[in-house]
Length: 457
Image: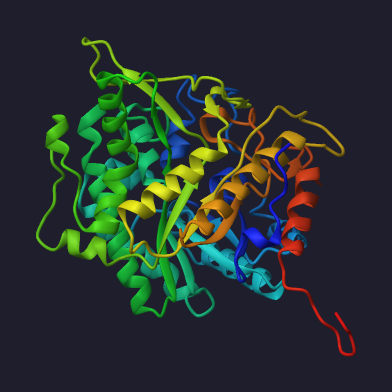
């Protein structure tokens, strides 16, 4: 197993977090006037969810938020990342907020503050109201304005106690899996015609960022899924395939946010973004931190000439894998290399937050104590990689485990378990795993020593 990083590898003031998302843990899909979302639509399609499950009750967290807050506080977290579902707050995708939903999240914020944990909400974790998708979703520029209105509703209610915000979660996966290949909601299969969703999401983030800053937010950013892209063979064809995939997964998001311009898409034969005057300036000025979700590297090879896309994703040679198999290889050095490369290309990189990092491994549905040494090894290796990147000058300030709880894992339903805490989805019982204790002890070990009066230490 990879050694646990020592205190010397992490700077003073480094923050620790854990994360969840609303649709994955809340259940109560029909409670308190919640509106319909694209995930309600998607899961009803035959075969869309591996085990045919419906995300209800999931962890039943909507009815029992105090249980999750106690688990977050028990870890000694600095901040807890959770999400607010747009479809619950604005059931019609516009207008005044749903008071019952806003009351719920106001209570959650108060519970966290009372427990000494800073609330760090995500305003969009893939839960677009169905009616907004019907009006064009992220293919429509107007969605950016509707999102900003929703953010204003939330900020007006919570902004007196919440100072730190994520706007969007993983816009890359919304574009690539939601609109390009249809593996996730809304299930569109547009291939390269999905690219306008990149720009409209970034524009929505910029509009939301201004709304939050106008209401006194101290820190606003987004968090994107990133991967370190490797060519399968050392050939010109595979290097070109890797460059195209790196552009689509990573650089179409990093470059406008960190450099104020999109990469040259037309050099790869791709259509340009639907940019209007002022868009890129607003996007480039929109972040106080850059959030990175990282799970695995991606190895690609050149596709057959008849393929509609120029790359194929293939297994990473020699890498161990998570419960997802070859789809998710384990390579902590890839996170280090990604961070080093990002800093080299953007020397004035703002503070970086690792917004998600974690792994699913096979575990029983009904269990007592789980000794999840594979997960501990995965987390320790990636935290060590972050420490090495910090030593090299990358300004990483926070690390977040995905996930606090086992949850409903999107199209994989209940078949994948990422949690530090085991959840029995029939009873709702929560049982901390060995990784929970390990993370708690790691956090405690990185705190400054407390010197009591009269101590000679």
